[in-house]
Length: 194
Length: 142
Image (cartoon, rainbow over all chains, first blue to last red; front, side):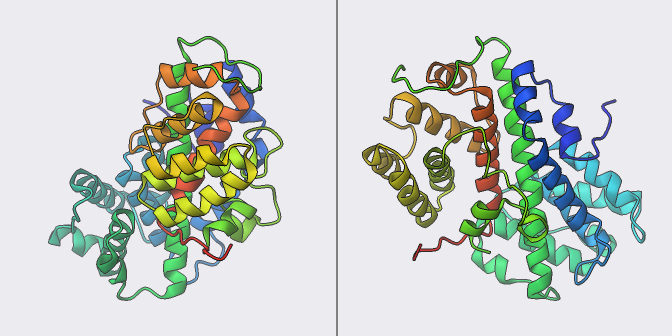
């Protein structure tokens, strides 16, 4: 069973990158560490403010699951399961709902009543809001009952964080796979071939 | 938050705005190429205002404003050749819901001088722009 990564640095280290790509990623170590610190600030803040730590981590699970990035889903599920006030059962329900929502995407999917009772009305509202943001549904974006502007700002930042990581991991994985049978990349320079 | 601000500061603006973000890299694509990649990602996602905004930045920074105008007008598949065409095509492939960069795109990048640092930069730029789209609002007065 693959181990769960603890950070973006960790996730990138686990990718099957060749020597050239790995060195290029390592040269961006500072920027990647900044992203890891940003993640800690957002998902494990000392003072949670208008969005609780459980909610922050649940949102991260939901966004990662909507994007079907297993590596990130597992990382955020582990983080959620260890949060005070949450547990494996809540984590499983959220993941299952996100999976269903991903299967229906871009059509909206509302949690089943039984799941909604476990998740709570506040998270159900924000999950619908996230789906609306991702599909550009303006009416749905406006339905944010119980969420202040500050809280929605945090939701948006968590989405940015998670989607960025989804794209980095998936993009580099794709590059690694494509490079397996390709000649080494040329040195920098302009040509007008191809 | 305006998209422009995320470019200036890197994506984790609130906590790391004084640090170096992914958009300020010693190695990698130049400013115009990144703006062109941002144009492709925005356009493919249907954010035309944002695409036009990035097109202005790219056209100002690159030696070939006609190529940028063509890319903005026609989108992908792009008629562009050379390095810009290779980058635009690869950006489009990486911006899909399931990234689909293949051997052909990679060979095309390599034959146009795109090295490993630039490839990582391309992936990071696509990631940064994609992640900002749900909150992006183009600053039209920029």
